[in-house]
Image 1 (cartoon, rainbow, N blue to C red):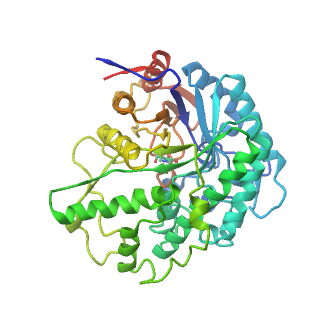
Image 2: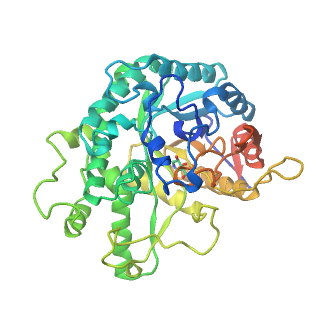
Image 3: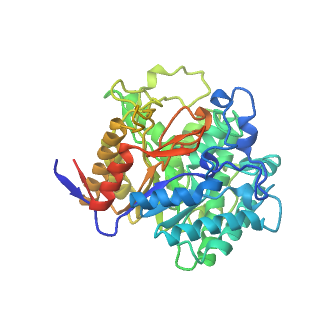
Length: 458
Ligand code: IFM
């Protein structure tokens, strides 16, 4: 295997999020989040699973930091549970107990030589804010500003990397369009309003974080999925354009100051998701300028590609007119095609179409069950191959001139995978949820070696 080398200052990290790992949902003054509510709504989460205990990271974070250290992990991306800081989202004074927890976590990381990358919002909205409309309400933007201010004031002196939001597409579309995620709404026009408020809150938070954390790098993370036409037909090419607009450009374009893509506004008007004409009803004067606040990096979460075949989709369905066509070849347990070339193509495309923006892979990983063998060892060869392929794609794109500054494996450990509950395991580390025993998998050793050598074999 030819080793592909990463630049010396390239950052190798691992990622998690609060609701997926912390547990301790009633401790430290935490209020309920929309995911606590959603998990208790019958039929929403597989097996009725909840994040009540998850990986018990709230109590076991010293052990988890030691684990990361043993793997040589250089940076840890985690998120702040908003309802730990503002239990209902409506308070004016933050909950000191919540801030204390994250400050202890940050101190532990710094002492271990691990750089914290803090995400503000990874989907656990305080239920109190949802009761007032959640992301469909503009008031949530103001509440997010208070949240950013409180976190910045407490952690700004110690944290130099902030991510405002994780995957606005998921918040808007899974949460408000198809109802797969909390709050479980199925309302296309509302989903577009929610998307706008998430982006607006990002733009509002950027200067707040910069002021609180002098010299900090501030960015946002998008889940980007490159679309490929299933055939050379004009219909499939148009399906691919539409998918790209729906999934990628609707978020990328306003963030870099281009506003919402005109072709998609036209599509959505035609499909009745936006009013047939006139201004977009949710965009107020100055919003697009706010959303376009300069960022220091764009976080990219990549898992798979989509293949688009327009004619397979029933016209009447209240879904995007085009659907991803799953490929037949290799898929992970969650059904997503393994396609590292898509990551390389995506990175090259971002560097070309959105130049001047440093990029970080803030999530990339694979769900495979692979339990411990009789000797207690987890031989997750498929995950090793997944990471090898995608890290090589990163190295190749850097060699081709892409300004890629870091890579975060999803995830440090098996955790609560949203609507799939504990059925899907993305971890480098196996978690026995009954005993909370952690077992680093072969993929953890593989990644540790990539970090140690700064190179990946192709
Ligand atoms: O587990 C999620 C994460 O919370 C957001 N990005 C995708 C991951 C895998 O589905």
